[in-house]
Length: 137
Image 1 (cartoon, rainbow, N blue to C red):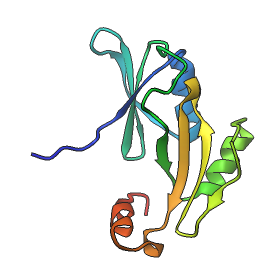
Image 2 (cartoon, helix red, strand yellow):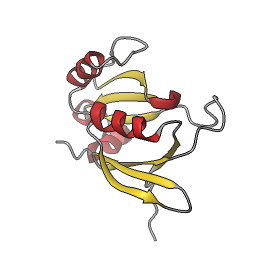
Image 3 (tube, one colour):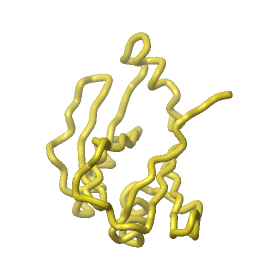
Image 4 (cartoon, helix red, strand yellow):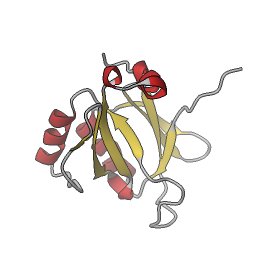
């Protein structure tokens, strides 16, 4: 038996705006939009990852146990420029550590995203192995 993380499930105060944001800003694609478990659920794909959106307002304004969702890209500079051009507010400029660079931004409903680019060829050991599964190469 093998287990793996399949998706992150997010509450949405406005599910249609949230769908549009993920699709327009990051190129996500809707894979399913319908009733699932008694409520509207929208399953989107973002590269090899999945996010499920739940048509229910977030239960509080806190983050609970979730700090952020990591979104990997192969061109962080271009992604940042595209998002800034579409009005996304960033907390800082790109932080570059050589093999790893990232920038944080908000998605709908206060979900914090870490947009990052990692170069496994510049990493050692377990970190290199961990980031070598990139499907974008």
